[in-house]
Image (cartoon, rainbow, N blue to C red; front, top):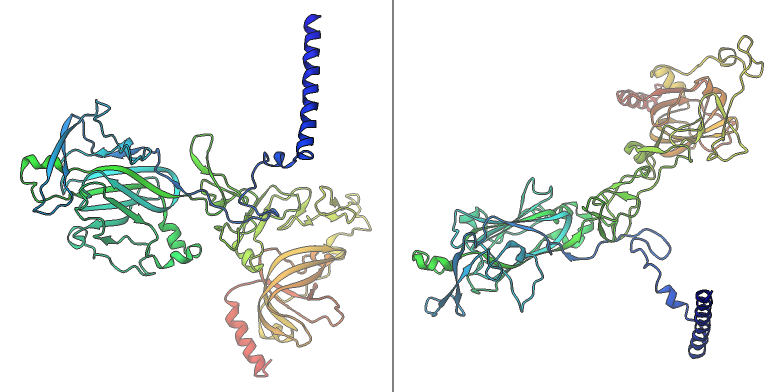
Length: 556
């Protein structure tokens, strides 16, 4: 009981203190500042504007090499070996220089120079250097290999040297995790002799995805502390229009970087055995500046469940680089985001009747690049590209929206032995199809219109079906008919479609021929059982052009 009373007293004290604190805050500030809670809310998503509209977003700029493992083909200290550093301000022949010698020993922490020093925190006040074995001279080379873990878009690659800079070296990149390598940049005082490349070749739009050779950064001076800096876009003509340059977007992309040191810089005294301990490759900092490649669809990269680095994709995209649309978002093709357009992936319009869809480029082009999604396995007795009409044997319940799972009802059937008088057998109610089956002068001349078109979509409107078609070519039309190329409407009675007069399928191209209905008040064409609809064949193009010329010559 005593403990309960004590707990109650403590609770009362806390409540009283809280009331007093609130009163004090109100007295001093005139009320509560609700902004203090707003500051604790999650920051806005950079991939969407204040209205929730998608926009291009990119991850932060980083040193992609920091903390990463570097594999070196040669490292001093196994076994312990001697090396010497050169002192002096220049490499002039008359300059007096001294050699200060040390021991490299991988077993002694203060004397080791492992590859991990290449990508650790670079502190100018406490420089740590990776170092190769002494005097590994041409044609033998030394390589450094760095894996970034995923694709990055690189801005630069830099190397800060503790030794003389190499006389000749190459920077390579890989886009497939080290399976293949592409040269990024050549450095040499003798480009032609060493790499069979001209020195400082002009970069044009025709060769801006090729590595060039330069004698920059290959001087023997300074004796220590020299830098090699490669900018991926410097001097590339399309750099100012990067969003619209797939060539340069590919050029800056890399998963791995390899540096090959081909030839040491020397002072000309390497013939002396004692001098060779002064020539080696030593680097204090290996930096790779760039951004995680997400194609404008992510603002950061995160580690997945398997520990791999991947983009945190937005805009309905997916993949390590947000390089494809996520499932069911295939209404238009995937595209990289730009400053003008986020190019987000758009869900297929299946009216809630399908869970899968695919992209059809031909339909996308025919729609004026508005939509190319085709729904798969429509449910709830629906059919069509968008699951937007009832399948055969079912009719539309107009009291429910098309998105309702019971929007399509089964057409009632009479007894098997005696057909229902309301629903006669097809052969009793269907007239004979009178449309032509061939393309000849007679059929062409008696038709009021002759067109080649594609069927894009259809919508049931009572006893009529309204098709959206894309007219590709108009071979013939009467002046009274308002017909043009592009998207048009076409109407067919439900009864004629059920009798397959005409027989039309979505996504197909047809040759349509028929008479102009003078009583038609609808915008577009009207087809019936007398109209001609034949699946299009490319060889008909020439024949119809000939008939078109004959008509103009009055021979129709």
